[in-house]
Length: 389
Image (cartoon, rainbow, N blue to C red):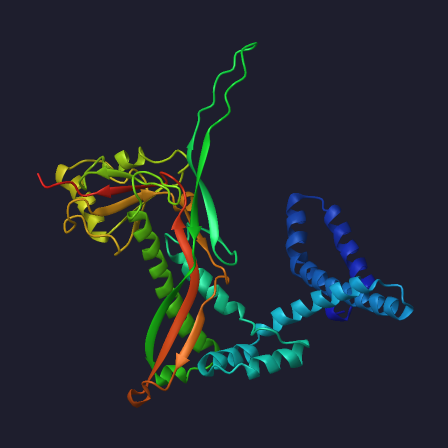
């Protein structure tokens, strides 16, 4: 009998039969053979069992409703659970993805709302397909720096406290006087969200793409460019940190040295002990300068001290940097930086097919609302170029 035609009692009987055969196996080889041969069937039985139990629950609830024995709040909670499940499943259907793509192109959401209303009973805000959210989150994660940054989603401005200074613990001898209270001074970084925007012109042929193909092309391109800009914003804020913390900003240590052996090791020594997972951020040409120092001296040494090197074009190359320019950052981005997405990790997209229609071009604007900043003292060390000898 096919699993899909089995009753709950038949499924349980078959499960018990397989369990008995497994328990009576006479050798390890026979045991493994039985487990392997039953694997697919057990999966199908489990899935069908879940379906049948869900049907039983719904039937029991319907009977209880008719008899008046179910508390109304429980009914509403169950209805809400079913509704959310239906919305999630439907918004990822090909039909809805095509409608969502057309909504982005035209700005008209009637088709999306009508589909949701018809298929799941109610339409609120236009639901975003999971594939769109996945593209955005993947690009953020694939950015080597942003993937390390701690992320939150709090509406409005967010204030993050950091330790400016604190007294040391003391030894208390038995019978001696009370110890002094710790002196703890805190600073506060206020993360104020800003819109990071990316504008792009594409041909009419791109606008003719349908559904998932259109979303993949447009969302991925805009999401990638916005994540690169967010990375640059964070690097700029770290470079701007002073050597002394203030009530509104943490500090960063500075090491003035060339791209030579020992420079990264010296920078590591200036980090807060809480910065346990540091990386080195630099221009590709700077990495080459460090490697050249190793090769020229024929040393068998790693100039990066085993640390991961993250490349960026937002820091100057060592050779072209001016005196006191920051050409490398060493720090722990998970401990020392924070990003807040007040509206969630999503991108708003606007499409204008009128302004450049004579050139057969369509203007597409992507916008992400985010605040990102360094939030811990000595989480980062800036390596700056020394004066020429």
